[in-house]
Length: 355
Ligand code: DNO
Image (tube, rainbow, N blue to C red; front, top):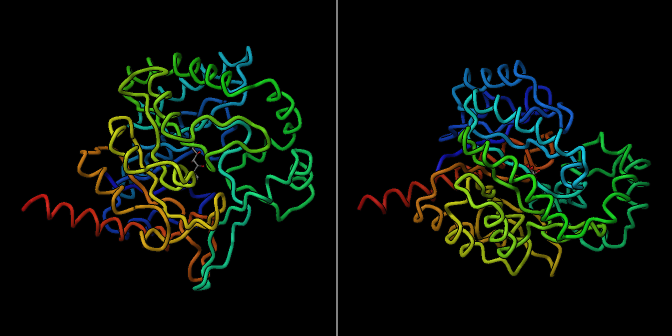
């Protein structure tokens, strides 16, 4: 498995590539073109510029996260064919520039969601927190109001340009059931996976975060059954998922070790993160260390290792430490600590293996 680090680009990240260089064992940068409008093909010169910057700093650019999917594809609108074509156009250029894995998601309207981005922990660091009741009590209307009027109300994975059309999006999704969302995912995979095979790019869908429906919007990649269905929707060596321990782990019924073992050939990317359960639905993110939360980080890494996981891994969200100012979850310090924790585990497994 190969260690990587997510970076949002010079304009959008408080962390520099030269800082990342000083974390032991990071081989690749997980990158994106954050300012590109969702659904449009990424311009080749910008791809080339980003890739050369990454390479000049001593890293490879083999993983892109996220090449986002336009809502028309998820909604199954007639315009989806144009957006799928643009997706494939971007895949072609990415492949030319050395990209091997694309992480995407199929969550309607929203990406990942937390209710507090800076919850103080016992040690005075802050971390992201999820309290289900806050969202459960909120109608789509309240949500829109909060997003428009309350500048401190922020959803971390939110594509802000969607704000103007959010009301229409909610309306459009009224007729989309879980089953029709599955059909729309199948349509997408049938179009893109043959191309992905040809280009040798592996597509790794990100699980729902949190792994349940919110605001009555369907979510379909939440547990082992869903992962099984995804893989069988278009069986291919290039159709797989991102094994995100924090997202899948928020569902207390998911057996992460079992999932890692059973589906290792379809895991192209692993996001390693720990969370502490507060009750049946709520959680707070913690350091990567296993005993700080409820995710069996040691057994997960050991299972991936022993089952010959050969793709990419990265630390996921970190806490905010030492007054660092950064994107929520994506500071330098705690993710660097997370990497050193994982390096220790992997080095130990390597040593055992050589005995
Ligand atoms: C959260 C991330 C997600 C992920 C997207 C992939 O920290 O893991 O936002 O990048 O869901 O499309």
